Image 1: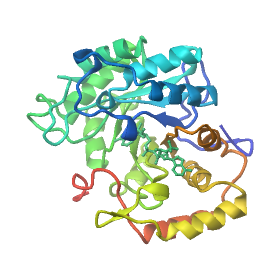
Image 2: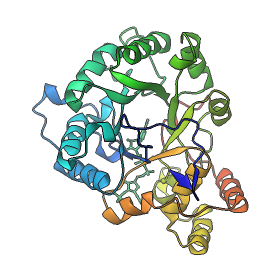
Image 3: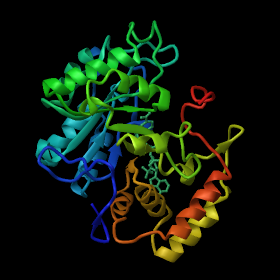
Length: 323
Ligand code: NDP
């Protein structure tokens, strides 16, 4: 990855097993997940060919990084897409996430250890590149007695066994990460990634999370990076005219890029790795075509100050009201 020939300053330069720098992630959640339907093996899982096709399109157009999770139940589609694309497994970076349960939904797996073996089978691979805990919202009943600390120790074991290359978390606030760090034997076994909601209208999912990540060598991955383009709601109603709209239009014109390219490039310039998705080949190509321009410091500041004037959280509103 280059920024006018220079490496983008990602804190960790993650690579595929074969040594290729990873691209933005292409997601298989949000519009794709079939939450609560159970595991594919519990019911005759019919491949969702539209998702397979979209992933193949992304791989063929240069993505080498796929984001999946237990709760999305999209492992079979990821496996099928990698196979269909003809790209070698070691040239693709696959992330999956253990779900510790959510609200009243009991975790499908008893533990991360149980989950990773199922994930490897469903993904038809013998290793996962990045293994995350999907959220910090453990509960005594829903998480089968697991806690952040016990789950993190199992992620460490998964890394030691070679079943996963890197370990991290998602949606963790500072106090949650501190719990994981406390039971890590050394820096090598501390969280390397925190995948969180990030866009100009939510520049810190939780208090000081970006600052803490920087100080602790944790790469932030952004989900929902394109939120300002289509997801904004106020009082339950979709909002089309929000303050970033004219700013994005102005910057699109200035840099000769689309508004989504401006948002993705802004995310990268913050040292954050976007996880995005599109079913449209043109948008897939555009999302990777963000390395040949740079948004000026003043324009980044404008995006940030206008964004900060209109806070919007698309995910986990209830859970984060005290963070
Ligand atoms: P984005 O914010 O990037 O949104 C992707 C959506 O944007 C797609 O549905 C796409 O639709 C649309 N889109 C793409 N380009 C444009 C454009 N130029 N104008 C308007 N719309 C556009 O990402 P998501 O929020 O969907 O999340 C990406 C991934 O992140 C998920 O799939 C999942 O893997 C992960 N995630 C993780 C979470 C977690 O808790 N860890 C939570 C949520 C997501 P179209 O197909 O029409 O182009």
